[in-house]
Length: 189
Image (cartoon, rainbow, N blue to C red; front, side, top):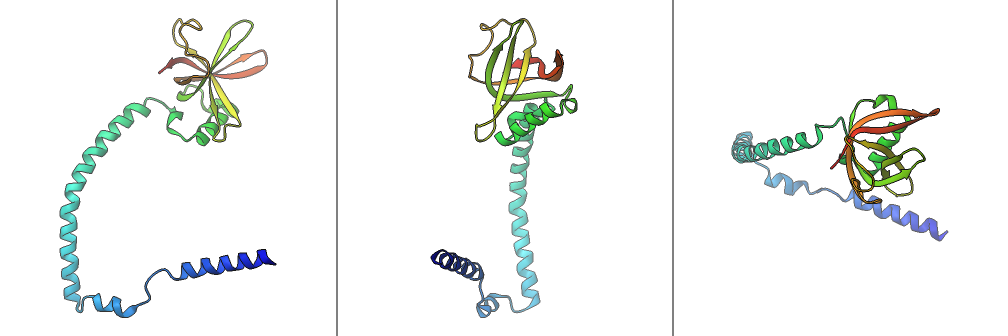
């Protein structure tokens, strides 16, 4: 019973605060309003001219800043078909999941990603990967990468569990009957 009363009072308070928004004093609003249409038009014209003069200066500054920002952004992210470094952790995890689930949609696309470096030492070769965790850090997905060039582990690779940014071309390969995804011609930044 007490719980219902508290909920009811909370709802009443919420409704009261929402309905109290705005002014219901019609006299004060009409007292400050212009008396004639000509006065109203004159005030609007003056206000528009003043706003236009201020905005033209601001537009020039904004336009210059926007152009330089766009050029920097274009140089950073336009080089890649998929730049996972620009996404939130939840979106990155979802996109990597999609890359693993529907790899054919990503074949040949350039990908850039940041995550944790790890190595799996197999019988025939080592597998280097960039691991991405979801927002709650309970789940992780990773993409293997193969550096472009002649590199040897551990000399030419970062420390395990260090944060890396890697870019390369998305590809898949088979080992036995299993299909795996990887970034080929990869570069560490």
